[in-house]
Amino acid sequence: MRWTARHLDTIGYALLDHVLLVLAAIAAAALLALPLGLLVAHRPLLRAAMLGGAGVLYSIPTLALFALLLPVLGLGFVPVVVGLASYALPVLLRALLAGLDSVPAPVREAADGMGLRPGQRLRQVELPLALPVLIGGLRVAAVTLISAATVGAYVNAGGLGTLILTGLDQDHTEKILVGAALVSLLALAADRGLRALERRLGDRAGLRAAP
Image 1: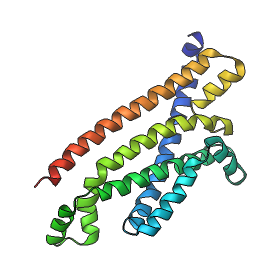
Image 2: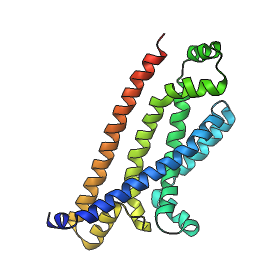
Image 3: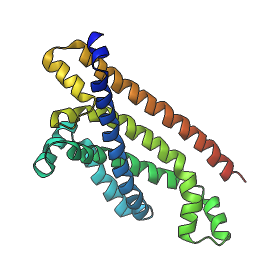
Image 4: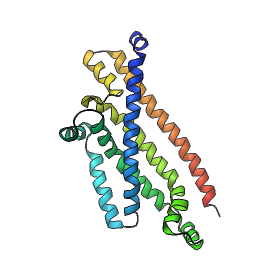
């Protein structure tokens, strides 16, 4: 592991770039998913159209999507963030809608009986109870994007994919193994951390919903 010991700074920067790519994409997707989800939650036709369109984006192969974005956005960070966000959006949107659907009708009726307006009911009752399901969707999106972000190396976006790509070009096994191992560990850490948060919020939501 001589190369690893001599290039810890390079590995650290690649790891940081990878995390920033994923976080930026998830933040962008969340900012879109929340208003879109609330817009279509009680409009079945619009909801089906929105989910269908998001599903089409999700089905496009990662490298092909980045290639489609290059003429408009160029190389680097931005097209990869936009591409990754388009993969996270359907996951977060479905999770948000499923979470809102999971709120029991008696809970909504009780909130209405307390005189809460629709906006207040949404903020104080529905969204807190839907949060565990939304975190579950966030977990799926995070793990998916951590893997997909490795392809960003092909369009000069940096990240751990750079180690894998240069390792393949140079027939450098250690670079490939380091890059692949860090991607796997990052995905595992995100999965474990968000799963624990999902369970904790689920327990709290269960207590809130209990009569």
